[in-house]
Amino acid sequence: MSRRRTLGPKKKLALLLSAATVAGGGAFVMATTSNATPPAAATKSAADSTVCQGLATALGNNEKFIEGQRTAPDAQSEARIANREAVIAQIRRQQEASGCTVGESAQDSQAAQPEQPAPSQPAAGGEGGQGEQGGQASGEQVCNGSTVTLSGEGGAPAASSNQFPAGTRLKVTNLDNNKSTTVEVTSVSGSCVLLNDAAFEQVREAGKFLIRRAVIEKVG
Image 1 (cartoon, rainbow, N blue to C red):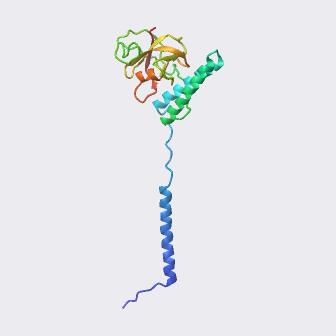
Image 2: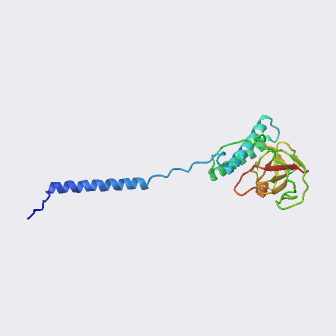
Image 3: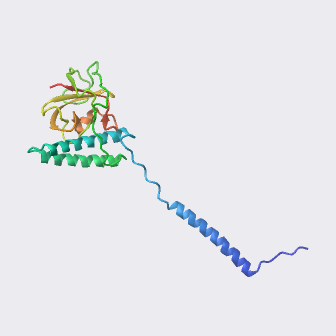
């Protein structure tokens, strides 16, 4: 007949403390794991995203404009600079909301883009820049190879330019979706042509802030 071995009080206490330590350690590990802060999402640069590239280009063009105004100021420079600084602040907010690197700036470069051929048929759009199919005749093609982005300014559809005076009418065609808008230059910018928010909405592709393949024509 076998005998059961009975543990003494001290050994029982030691086993209970050991089990509690293991259980407590496991609970601590689980709590630490569950409370860990998830890694922050990486921000995207202009090289990673067309959206970020468009916003960086818009920011760079506005900064270039401000630099030009400070280099050669006139009576209206102070007001223009204040306006563009407000635009830059808005672009920075758009960069943050889009997950882009806030403050990243890029200059529009015509040399970096291949020259785009004029469309063989009248593209979408007509007088007034409504983005509809129209039959407006093509005018003189200008700013060959230039990308087009937004200035960030509000108001009715319009454009700004560093090459054409106020009152010039420009037709901008986005070859990627065959939409066009015809707008009047109303202010100076740091690029061949920048569309304000309303005009850019008429020709943009959804979710994009840069038109890589654009045809720009002087029509008046």
